Length: 260
Image 1 (cartoon, rainbow, N blue to C red):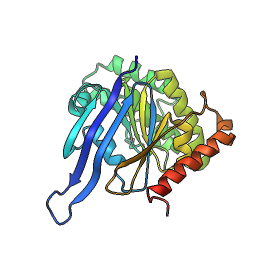
Image 2: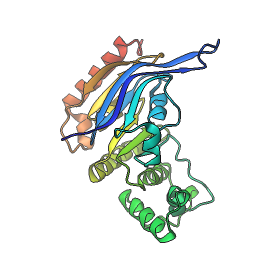
Image 3: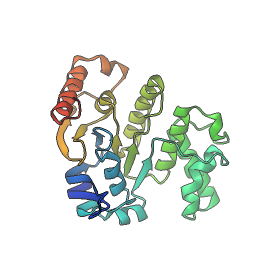
């Protein structure tokens, strides 16, 4: 039986309400994500994709509507460490080595030193960087730094991983390798993932469903089920069905006046 990890009902977010600079960022968002899904959000810059992630992560609050994470308020889910978050930049502290960067959230929450080290090492092994704990961030490639960021987000073994364009700054070849790595981690951890991207091909390759959003005010205009078989491989991108889904999502974006 699947359970709802994210449940959003009639979510609206208005910045600077009632003022001249008022911005309606999100409008009437209804979204359900069940356990074990990999769901991508796609749409133009400024459509509210990252805002929606920030609402789920309890970094900001909705103006109106109901939002639950694992059946709790986002605030309680944050307290219970139900989710991890990965941003576009790895945001590693240059003065801490890789292991110490991963240990940081554990340290903040008062975990004992040995437990911190064990959990950090397990997270490093998960992202296949087990021998890099003593390296410094500047000694790692961009892709390796993002693996460390993913390890840090997973160190509490959360049921939900929120990812805000984590591979957007990487070159195409590294990005495709990271896509494969992320799918492996997703399979091994059975974590639910909500993923923001501007890349149609990336969204289709990774996802179970693709949520298409309109230009601001951000609304969900369409949900595209991705029926490509798993496990997915580099060859998946060459299949006719993959190209058909790319064309389908592109057409939905065009209908939403994103591509004009």
